[in-house]
Image (cartoon, rainbow, N blue to C red; front, side):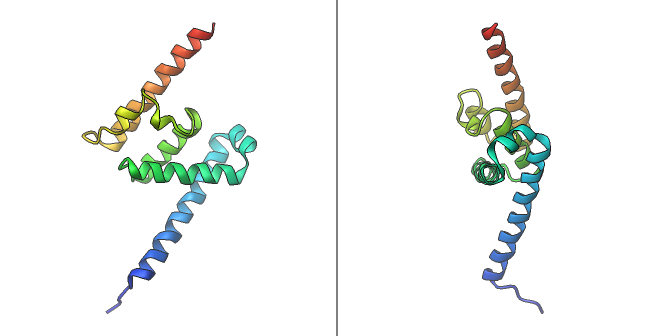
Length: 120
């Protein structure tokens, strides 16, 4: 019988997470090329790591949902989740993570339209 010690499992988890972070950084490079160039890879990686950690705090853990959360940090700002229009939605854990992220994206679009009209 194969026995995996806790230390071995922790190393495996870290390796898997590092690979996921690498994939997210490459996703940002493709999806947000101007931000990637302006920030540079190390700053993008740091933002991705922070976003992944914050998503976990908000009980967002499915890879697809975490990737959407990371996208929002580039679309709406690195601390969008603390904005008055986003925070109550994201902290409402009665809804699924996917539903909360969908609602936040709608709210972000609504806020962007309001700001756009106010500038004209």
